[in-house]
Every structure is written in structure tokens, then in C-alpha cells.
Length: 292
Ligand code: C2E
Ligand code: MG
Ligand code: MG
Ligand code: MG
Image (cartoon, rainbow, N blue to C red; front, side, top):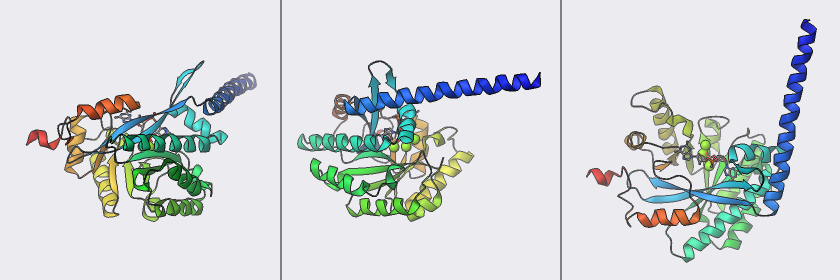
């Protein structure tokens, strides 16, 4: 009897696993086609200076709508792309698209200081990465100061030496380097101290339970102090409320990104969003100047 149910159990798991594997293969093939036929596109989320409300930059985020499968979130397709190796093609595609867009903004005199692009930690193991980034940058004609690379760690940094070499080469070109999703998953304090980062992004999970004097508040305060003492710009992501913004200002967080200011937007919507703000950018919701 027990044996029988064990076997059923085993069969259940193996069917579930087969179904998942088939799902992944389906997704991986569709993704390959999407990259080939240019079905991916970027949306851009504003990053706002906490103290002044000035626009500091935008983060480029990949979107995919498959004709048959519909909208597929990066939370689903990025892990698949990392498993199949397609993450490198996505990273380079995102870089090209974001640099091209920045060149268009610059020609149109639309004042967006920096565009940030997510590059998987797995991609950093490829010794060609810095040269490829340099080629894309040169082809777009934008100055390196206008580009930041977000090192996105959904996987452990396995080849740390190679990551360090790539990071140094990227910084030597004058491109920004940001540690994404800091404080959860695989990002560690030793990476923070040793990699040539100029920006630190606090993972948005810290915004849950972020209240005055709570434990999360202590941790976020400490992260901001560490980042700033290492000379980095500290960005809080996932900021949704005025209360979170006010607390982050009190503890000297430099830059705010989140739904409170704006969701990630397509190019036209972003330009409309920019247009709707006054030149100073100071009358955004919650700006310090409002209270004065
Ligand atoms: P991420 O780089 O940490 O990007 C921030 C994510 O938080 C985005 O999710 C954004 O839409 C979401 N977000 C921003 N503000 C808020 C907020 O106030 N509240 C909430 N609940 N969420 C907020 P998205 O666009 O779904 O992207 C998920 C992840 O996928 C990204 O996390 C990034 O790691 C990865 N990703 C996206 N595009 C690319 C890409 O082109 N290349 C690589 N390698 N990874 C990418
Ligand atoms: Mg990011
Ligand atoms: Mg992030
Ligand atoms: Mg995140």
C-alpha cells in the first residue's frame, strides 16, 4: 500500500516536472523567435533625486508580448533566458535599444541624464562583454556618462575574478556600474566593497514593512550609510507611498524609483510625463519644495 502511494507520488512529481520542462521549452523557443523578429521592447521608469525632485535618469526594462502567448513578464522569461543562454542576446539587445533611444533623446534635447540597462551576472562571465558594450556605445554616439549598467544578480556570481575584470573594464570606459537588488538573494557586502560600483540599488522587498523605528528601517538606514560611505549613489526601488519617500529622505537616500513617481513607461508616455513636470521638476508629488 505504502509502496503504491509512493509510486503515485513519484509519478505525480515526474508529470509535474515534465509539464514544467515542456513549458520552459515552449517559452524558450518562443523567446528565441521574439528576439529574432524584434518582438521585445523597452519601457523606461523614472529615477528621481530625493531631495530636489530632479530627474536623475531612467531604467530600461524589457517587455515581451508574444502573438500567441500574450504578455509574458520579465519575472518569467528572464530566468528561462538565463537557463538557455539567451540572456546574453537579451542583454545586448537591451543595450542597443537603450543607447539608440538615448541618442534620439539627446538629439531632441529631451533632458534625460542617464539610462540604466540590466545585465545578468551570468553575462559578466563572458570576457567579451566590455568590448561588446564599448562597440554598442560607440555605434550609438552617446557619451559613456549617459549609460549605467545594472549588475542583476538572479544567479550567484560564480566566476568572481571574471566579473571583477569586466566591471573594471566597464568603469574604465566611463560607464556607470550599479549593484541591483542589493540586500537580498546573492548580493553580498564583500561584492559591494570589492567591485568598482558607483551606485547601489536597495531591493524593493525592503519597502514592505518599512516604518519609522522598525527593524526594516534600521537595516535600510545601515545600507544607505554603507553605500554612501563607499562613495556610491544609493537608489531605493519600489517606492510606492509618500510615507516611504519621506522616511527615505530623512535617512539621506539619494534617488527614488517606484510607482509613487511613475510606473515604467513607453517612450511616448515617458515624454508626456516629463512634459507635465515643470522645468525644475520640483512640484512632483511629495517634493520638499511643496512643503516650503
Ligand atoms: P529590477 O531590475 O530590479 O527592476 C525593477 C522591477 O521592479 C521592475 O519589474 C519594475 O517594473 C518593478 N517596480 C518598479 N517600481 C515598483 C513599485 O513601486 N512597486 C512594485 N511592486 N514594483 C515596482 P519588471 O519590469 O517586471 O522587471 C523584473 C526584473 O526583470 C528586473 O528587476 C530585472 O532584474 C529583470 N529585467 C528586466 N529587463 C531586463 C533586461 O533587459 N535584462 C536583464 N538581464 N534583466 C531584465
Ligand atoms: Mg534593475
Ligand atoms: Mg532592482
Ligand atoms: Mg528588484
